[in-house]
Image 1 (tube, rainbow, N blue to C red):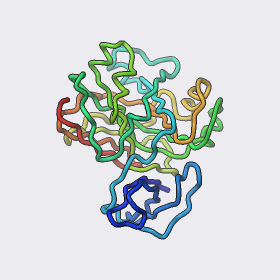
Image 2: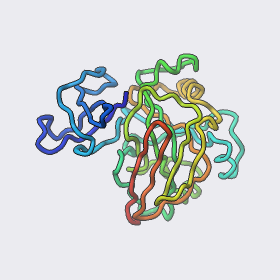
Image 3: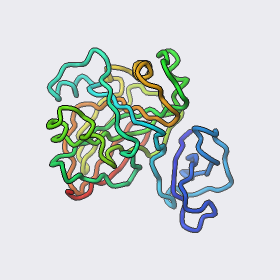
Length: 262
């Protein structure tokens, strides 16, 4: 099942507020009542063509986006470091989240902003100290993410909060797939049509169950919280006014444009 969040078309009886829906096999969206993370999936009668709605970020994290750094050996190497012995985690604010086709805003304080293609995990329930054997019990589904980073600020600060925390620096989407199973699917990033990143998800140093166990030993996760699982090598700058597309086989593509320089 693919869960979307969308802005209904003008004149719809659903009004103008964001709504949740289920993608059907014919690329139509069937509206569902309320937020499926809290109230389950209850289909309504309203259906829309995907071409007639505006897709939004499929989840707005209730509290946080937890990210894993250097979770691919080749990326750790390109950043001048070794593979960590345990996950390196940091947090992006929920205010950094945007949806597909929204604009990544170039901050005036940065000279370089980079793409980082990632698999994202959406958490289904309040959870703490989850053993990896039970990680699936707290996963609602998966989506795509771009961990946008002001690389020059990251180097200048010596830590990651400012460089990764700007508004619009966490595109998510286009939907949450509740049936997706991470395996050897390729995660890729194209910048202005040119392939920049490509690696199988199986190259992750720490897999999803291990990450969930590790993170929940540190902090309580809430429904709708998101975990970004790390990016492979090939990170690099995006172009002002350009476009970046993050894709994972079987999970779709997340497309965003970049604003002109701030």
